Length: 321
Ligand SMILES: *[C@@H]1O[C@H](CO)[C@@H](O)[C@H](O)[C@H]1NC(C)=O
Ligand SMILES: CC(=O)N[C@H]1CO[C@H](CO)[C@@H](O)[C@@H]1O
Image (tube, rainbow, N blue to C red; front, top):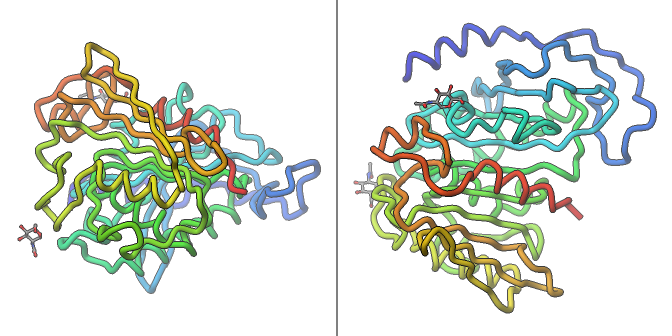
């Protein structure tokens, strides 16, 4: 386990304010949750929390907007780290807690057991247990913060990106989300065809995927990954196109043909419910125009696009019906 995990644990001692006002807040939106009205003194900083799920102690961190208003409901974005990592690293790496990306969102970074999410053959917990953790986490968040229940989103990288797909494919858990955005995802589960294990709660279900064409860990063309067999990214996208009843797609190339943005038109003419960004010369990392750890660890530099911005803009377009 990484030493920073322990540091995070030390800071963890529930910093959240207990000055809860039990009365229902006035004027909040219809789909706001029970946590509305509770006072939180620590805003604009990351706080560390724990909960018990399936009899196991789990941890997660929360970053409230610095302008957090207890009587206004906020979208929630869950960010799932990659393998051998923790939420804190994903937060720092993607910079998603910075106000330029999430000024009006509650950012949440759950920690996987043993630094991993379910689905890979190296995972320490079952898919069922990690999905239950997501449900328990959402229940806790709704009770603690003023959440807009129709705007809950999930993003993640690599093993965490794969788990985002696992959530999307689970009708009970995925049905609580408005949209999904895995990056460099390792799709170890629900990967035997359109219906092979995958039962999304709705059609269409908004999905955006970002992947490096030169990914040497989760190959664009699929095959043996570190934690099992992965589908080729175009094949995986094809399944989502079918699940979302997409009828056509268009490709926009940019940056001298290094970046390809595919947008599908799906059921009822909805354009962009399914989207994909392929960066030909990018490896296994978070796409960013600024250098960061995940790039350095695979000897990569900045790329042409900013995944954190693209993903937030995508989420902003969707509300759970
Ligand atoms: C996990 O799957 C990969 C890819 O198939 C394989 O190379 C590896 O040996 C497997 N590891 C375990 C522990 O089963
Ligand atoms: C190696 C590197 O540049 N890391 C940066 C990643 O992003 C965080 C947050 O912006 C910076 O503090 C790090 O220096």
